[in-house]
Image 1 (cartoon, rainbow, N blue to C red):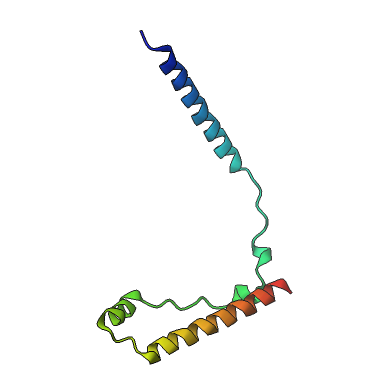
Image 2: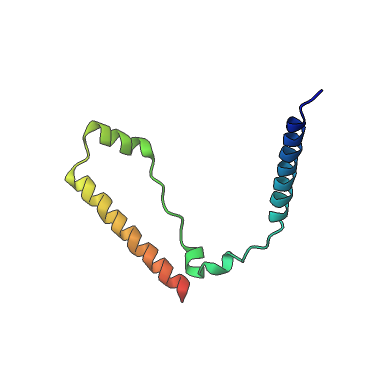
Length: 94
C-alpha cells in the first residue's frame, strides 16, 4: 500500500510541472516591440567590426612580447571604439 504523503507529493509535483509548462507556453505568445526601429539607419549600414584571432594575442602575452607600444595601441583602439559607440548611441537618439 503506497504512503498517502508520497501520492500527494507526486500530485503536487505534477501540478507544478503542468503549471510551468502552461506558463512557459503562454510566454511564447508575448508580443515584443519592434527592435529594428530602435536602431538608426547609420548603425544598420555600419560595417561589422573586424574580429581578431585570439591565439596570437594569447601567445604574445605568454611569451612576454607585450610591450608598452602594444599596450598603447590596444588602449588607443579601445578609446576609438568607445568614441564610435558613443557616436552610434547619439545617432540612435536623434
